[in-house]
Amino acid sequence: MMSLNGFNGTSLSEKRKMMVDTQIVARGVKDPRVIKAMLEVPRHLFVPTEYIDQAYEDYPLPIGYGQTISQPYMVAVMTELLELDETHRVLEIGTGSGYQTAILATIAREVYTVERVPELSERAKRILEKLGFDNVKFKVGDGSLGWPEYSPYDRIVVTAAAPEIPEPLKDQLKDEGIIVIPIGGRYGQVLVKGIKKDSRIVTQELFPCAFVPLKGEYGF
Ligand code: SAM
Image (cartoon, rainbow, N blue to C red; front, side, top):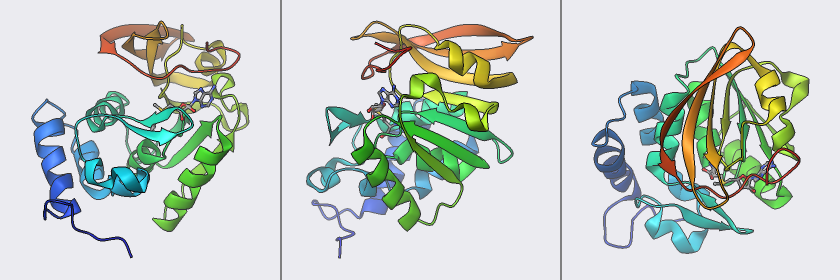
């Protein structure tokens, strides 16, 4: 059985509380739903075992296949920007470890998550099922095409960097819906929030960021 103690004697739940206080709340995240979800979801279960002692640190970590679990603060900010509530159906592109999926699914009604690496999708599915989430649907494939079967979505979040907002994602977002996505080049981007108004996306550029590239038809 996995030890609940961190390597320096601080329990993992204490580390999680510290992460939320010093990295999330101290930097201005205010949405109580996001704060509660970040306090609840055991991030250490989503990182490879050799990184468990770093699960609550202030940086992304490798999860294999050249991919990363995003920095906790980035997960919190992106989720807060979505202005999520319990009525929303969310499309997530880039399941990765499944950690952000769990945060989204703690708050929203349903989460549809697409990942191109089958092994990552399967691992994330196993962990979420073990944790008791029954409101998440997983798909393996090119998420730059979205997931048309269940569209339109109230919210869309893309956790990999794209050259621009993929057209299929614009189409699959509800009117008045929100999309959050890193836009830019392969090695540096700006986090963008878009709101769909009268079938057009009105965007706002927020701050610089660095994500792994979104591959696929509408990616790199
Ligand atoms: N939020 C995730 C987490 O907390 O673990 C981090 C996701 S990681 C930064 C980005 C993910 O996007 C990677 O797992 C990568 O394989 C995936 N990805 C890249 N291009 C994709 C595509 N076209 N469709 C689906 N997933 C894609």
